[in-house]
Image (cartoon, rainbow, N blue to C red):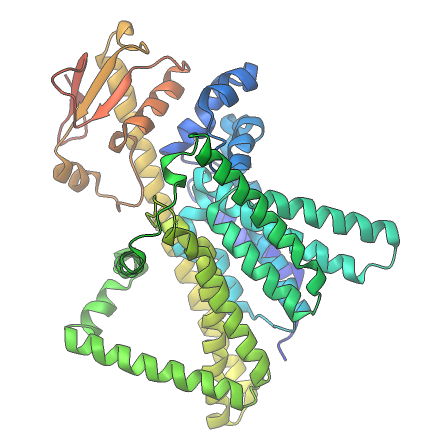
Length: 491
């Protein structure tokens, strides 16, 4: 069996991640929605109910995320690094809770899967970008915390402590689904899987109750006409969405910063080789499932390995399900945060499988154990270096945002910054991305009128700004500005 991973291991991971995020100092680089969701709210926090809640009415989708922005997160606007630290603590705690939950259902996780989920560059956007992490990371943290508390309540002997943990588990689980759509499905399937594994069937009402209340909430929002476009349902194009998802994943792994482009180019040079690879992969998967069911592993017996594999599949599939019914089904890099937890579990099963085969060939467990050390070391170093590279992207976008917003303010008179005025910002899209010289997943405020309005509001510390259009309304806008090849704003 795997040796138990100590708490110090998770503490070290926290510091590795925070040191990486602090490469350019103890600061956070705000981009895009950060300005709107936190900065603009902070400007108006003298009367939150009137200025934010009633004015924006964004509680129809992800209700608790909106209220958390208004009443909690916006207070960190002047010290976003502190909020980033809190998010990273939640991220690492989530991994710890997940590890302990798996222990309770006789699934042992090793260091590789934990490292993969903790600091992989694929999840950089979901963890670092606060506009996203306050939804995604927080929701997973609450989900796993609620499950962990419920499991602790089963072992608690003191009655009042048992009741406290049990009630806390229910309340926290009701909260977790109010932050992100993906968590609704993940919570339902994963929580149910855990309860079925420990044969506590009567507690299945907890995840179902959470799913029911948020489902009713969304339906009521739709019936009253308050449901935002992104929350409406669309059951059509199921297979088209699957294809789009696969295309996106393929595009992501072609990113130079993940060092996969060279491998794909050299190994998968034509369509025939692609089909051969898929055929071989399919054969390996079929054989692998047969193997773990029929054979004993060096670390786990076959049935436990199969259960771990099933868990990985559930964790991967469940968070993707909302994209098959939501009308706004764009899958961004941050949306891989929850499914990637399942990928890590599956990769760990494959990892154990490979070393089990290697152990049978070498017939020396010590040598196999020694071989694992450089793998973990290389994995850690590569993740840290790539994460620093991605941090540099955010820094560059932040500097570009500041430059453009400052020049827009300088090019316009005070009368332009009125709610009844309009501005059209224009540029050559191809040249803009070429000169931006940053991967597309990090969005500049100049790419969205709404994001630019938020940036102008926080730069001027005033919510009164004109309506901003990007590459449109040139003829009827009150002011027309251009961004040239040097990323300078001109009239």
